[in-house]
Each structure stands twice: as structure tokens, then as C-alpha cells.
Image 1: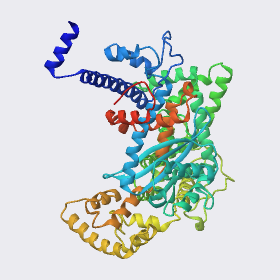
Image 2: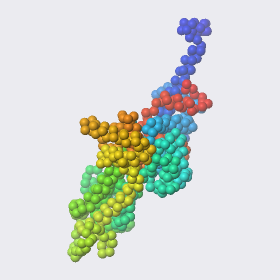
Image 3: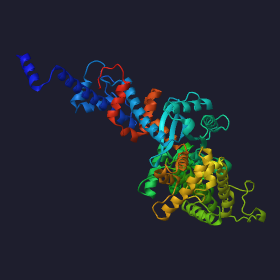
Length: 621
């Protein structure tokens, strides 16, 4: 009777046994796809949030099975399908470390494919590379590509690679292999390289830049401008002896004030003197000198409180702590206050440029303008008016801190030869530390510091490849040489443009730009704006549009790699040092390019995963 009823139902519904089997198979496939999507989304969430997926012990009797399993368990409490799949016996749960690596690789490759697709559509691109040690003491090479796409400049992280050979040949081979792996035509379309100033990277004859340019003729090397600015400040400290001592004392103050006993008093004194939110002294960075502006600012704002704390502790009978306080207190004199006020001003001006140079959307033409503007600012500081105003601030701060501004005994004024007017004397003979007045401060400290900064800027920011720099400036609407025929043609010659076609394009482009700007239809302020303006006319101005993309794609700094190293420190922590290089690379891409990762289509992921997932026990199609 049961068989008869089933037969009758099949006849009435016009469906057979194969149809029933097919429906059951489709239902099973849909459940499998939903389960794998859930696993992938949990892994994607933990990757973009830079959280560890696996636990130390993932067995069922473990109290903490790791973020991945614990998150799936929470989802299973509210989803019967996930709960059923996770309770299945055997090895079909798809939660093992091997499966996790496969899923992470598929997700990361989908992000990379999206980046590579944009780079190929843009045609021209630059490569930015830098290396850093992780907690496992492995050198990790970060590779970032910079390109123009859809009206904006992009700096996208492509990969982390374990660099076993740190010589120029090993690093250049690693970069080339990575570009070839992702199908990027570096020989024709690589137009720029951005590295720090290390000899292995920037060597003229056998460095990484020279070796890659031997393969890609148009890949010109650009020294990271943020590193250049950092080196300007480093060399300034080396050139002026008292400045070196000043920053050493600044670091000693930070170390002393962060001691447990002293720090408690420091908080109490701040609440009594200022109220509100207490401030902390900042640790000095050896690599980011512009960030020392915050350290100088915080100390200058709270200097009376610092002196009060030191005076309290120096009067206590507490051995080393009291002796250290007396030593620090004795060195905070008028010279220290003068240098603190000066560098709070100078580093504050420099920090703004340092922050701008690290912006991914900044093009090289604007970077040059900003550097020239900073140089002009330092030139303006070298005058009597600025020195007078700065000395007034120093005097006010000294009086607030009960530090003597003028000497009790009046000395005979030193007469300077008229031939030395406007110059400073670097010799320290006859000068005594602490014997400061406005003239002595100007001649002994302020002018030498400004002169050292400006001379270092002249030396480090003088570009050897003038044709490239002048050509990029000629594509900047704010430049006086905008669309200058000679400079644009020279730039076009570097990148293989047809000179006759480019001449005609320039003639027509000037007329179009003038007409649009006169009518107020467009406002062009940068090379990027000019590139966006040309994009609708790229069929009419192909060579000029390509040169504009080249100008935007030329790297300005290696800040993109530095940002990837910040993500590296959050991913490979002390509890995750056994992570293999492949997993680290995939997690790094998903974490850094989190916006792209979150926008991935999970149906497309199922197709990619199913095609690469061979001989498994789960059916996805």
C-alpha cells in the first residue's frame, strides 16, 4: 500500500524517482554552499579585524577553542543547519587549519585579482617596496602598487613575501617574481619605483632600482620624500651639538617621569595646577622625527608642572631618585627652554608636511610645491622679527618657570666685524652654556639650526632627474610652466610618446582647458584634477592622458609599506609567531585591503573555492 501510494503521488505530480533525487541533491548543495559561505564570512571577519583565528587547543573539552570555532559555535546556537553540520561525525566539518588556509587563499586571491584588473586597465603603474622584521625575526618584503584608476590615485598592497636574501639581486628577483606571478607587464608598464635611501635599494650601479630599471627601462627611481625629510632633521641634530644634547635630555625626562612613583606625583601636580585632562610626556621616535613636535609641545605646555615635580622629589631623602631629579633640574636652564620653544615651532611646521607626504592621494608635483613652501617658510624665519617674537616666547616661558632670563653681572658687549654680518660663528670658544640673551640665542642656536635645515633640504631634495621633475610640473595646472611644450615633449620622450602627435595634442589641449576654465566649467588644482579632466577625452589625447597617468602614478613616499608593517605587527603577534608565510600574506592582504575584502561577492567565492578544492567530501555544484 505504501508503494502504491508513492506511485500514485508520482503519477499525479508527474514526477519520477530521478526528479526526487535531483531535488534532494539541489537541497543538499544549497545547504553546503550556505555552510561554506558562513565559514568564509567568519574567517573574513576575523581577518579584516586582525584577530587570531585558531586557539591553542581546539578540542571539544577546551575552554577557549579560538575565535573562529567560538564564533561558529555562537552562530550554530541560532542556526540549525550550522549546528547540524558542526555535529557531523568524521572529517567533513571544514574547520581545520588546512581548510582555513585554502579559504583565506581564495579570498585573498579574489582581492588581488580585483587590484590587478584595475592596474591592467590603468596600464601604467609604480611599485613601492620596503622590508621589515616580524616577531619571528623573518624579513618580510611588502609590495605596494600605485596607479591611477577611476578618477583617483590608489596605493594597493599586493603581497607580503619572506625575503631570504637581502642583497640587491635577491630583493630585485623577489619583486620581479611577484609582478610576474600576478601577470603584470612590468617591462612595458612599470614607470616608477619608490624605496627608502638604503644603498642596497638606491645604488646607482647594482642596487635594486638599477637592476629593475635594466629590465623595465621606464621605471625611474624616486627616493621616498618622507624619509628625505626625516634625514634632514637627523643631520641637523648631528650638526649642532647642543641640539643633540637637548633631545637626549628630552628622552631622559620621559623615562624619569614614567616611573611608577614619579608618574603618580606627576598626575597629582597636573590636577592641582591645571585641572581637567592630564597630559603624558611622549616617547621620542628614532625614525619619525617629525612626531617629536608632539613631545616638544606637551613638555612646553606642562614645563612648570615638570619643574614642580622635580623640585619636590629632589628635596626628598630617596637616594637615586632624588639625585636624578637634581641632575635633571640643573639642566633645565634658559638654553633648554630656548631649544624647546624653537623646536616646538620648527617641528610643528615640519610635521604638517610630513603628514601630507604620507597621503596616498598626493602626487609628486604637489609634493615638490609643499617642500618648496616649507623651505620658503624656513627662509622667512631667518630674520630679526621672527627671532624677536621667538625670544619673547622664550622669556615668557622662562619667567613662568622661575628661570633667570638675564645675567646678574653685565658683561661687555661683544662687537662683531661688519664683514660677518648675517653670518653665524660655529666655533664654541668663548661661549658659555646658559649665558643667553637675544643676540646670543639668534647667533648661537637659531640661525645655525635654520641654516643646517635649509642646506640639508637643498642637498636631499635636489632631484637628479630634472627632465622627469620638470615634465611632471608642466602637467600641474598650478605651475607657471603648465603645458609647456618643451618640458612635456621631454617627458614624452622618456616614456616613448610620439613627438609629433603629442605636439598636436598639446596645442588642442591648451585651447580646450582655456575655454573650460574661462567659462568656469572646471577648476584644476593638481595633476590628478588634470588627469580626471582629460579622461573623457582620452581617445582624442591618448599620449597626453598617458603622461598624466604617469605623473600621478610616480611614487611620492613609501608610507604605503609603512602602513602595511603596522598591520603586520597586529597580525603576527607573540602568540602567532608559528604562522606560515602563505597564511601571513593572505591575512595581510585581507586586513590591509579590508574595504575590497568586505565587498567580495560570496557566490563568486564559492565558484573559486569549488574549482580549487579537489577530491573533497562536500558538493557545492
